[in-house]
Amino acid sequence: MPRAGIVHRLDKDTSGLMVVARQRQTMDQLVAMIAARNVSREYIALAHGVWQGAKTREVDAAIGRDPRNRLRMAVVDLEKNSGKAALTVVSLLQSGERHCLVKCKLHTGRTHQIRVHMALLGHPLVSDELYGGAAAGGLHRQALHACRLAFEHPATGERMEFKALPPVDLQAALRVLGLIYNQS
Image (tube, rainbow, N blue to C red):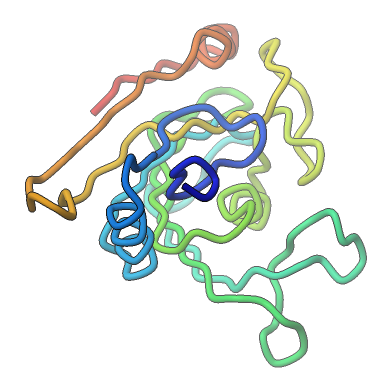
């Protein structure tokens, strides 16, 4: 199978859940389900800054290649630059003295989407140097974890839901920064 049945990808150094199909037909159906936004994907992110304002924010901002740095993605004006619509719903889980823990629900799946949208909100991810985040809490990768996936199985129609606790490095960083993740 192409790409060993991988249905979607995670950014390098992002931890968490991925969907891998064992059969080509199932893979094609799952890819179509993601494109049709019929797969629920949620992440937790540890970010810089004290959260202010509404506890839930909808970030509806197109993403494309950064015209000044081709290694980065950026929020772009679709009338002037190429890119694609991107929608992320960000919900505060906990805010600390200098950092916040948020849950991000993807409605689209653009490259670096959460990282770009969080930077746009003024909350770059911890240890995400590409988008303005500095190291903190002893974490040596961007503080992003795919914690939940849910979808209807393409063959059986059964509702599937998968959850994954943050890995040890992210849990340790949360403790160091005085934050707690309660899976819900």
